[in-house]
Length: 184
Ligand SMILES: Cc1cc2nc3c(=O)[nH]c(=O)nc-3n(C[C@H](O)[C@H](O)[C@H](O)COP(=O)(O)O)c2cc1C
Image 1: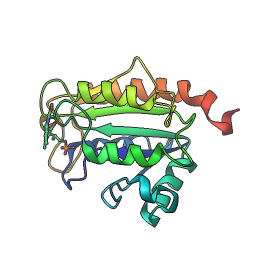
Image 2: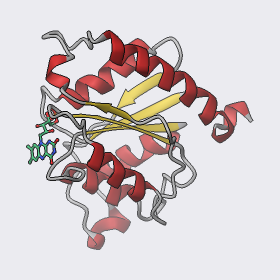
Image 3: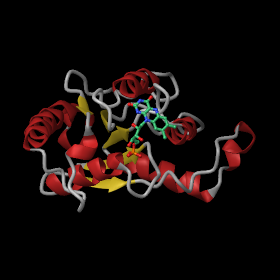
């Protein structure tokens, strides 16, 4: 299975990026994760959507070829960050590459709630007509107090979180099977 990871923070030391890299590394023997670049995406503009810049075409092509999308997001002002909304706007238009493509959502924050509101909003957004993505439910991954769970090398050292992630990922891999052509 090929998973495209879309991270809602473009800062270099992002905890959410570290979480995406952790999933990439920890489950490398089970599926392949490619972390996509949102920093190079221009702002969505309907005037140019039919003649979109190469960065947008490349981004959408990677999402299209993935079997599933892993969204890893912080919370900004009680919702998803603008960079994530911008990426979603591009994905939702023209060839609408998210249609029918399964999603799993994770997120982290330094606060105790671990991006709950952002994830709730993202789940709703993924059900919008232009996205229409089936979202893995019932196994929400909210990594609160994230700064206490990663070491300085970017390893997620909190064993309870790792055990929880193992369980969620195992269940996700079962859930996602009917959506993936190679298993059909
Ligand atoms: C503009 C801005 C708004 C934020 N709003 C929230 C918020 O509403 N809730 C929350 O838990 N954290 C909020 N934070 C704190 C982020 O959760 C924290 O900076 C987190 O580390 C960002 O994710 P990153 O490490 O992946 O960049 C905000 C941070 C910024 C920069």
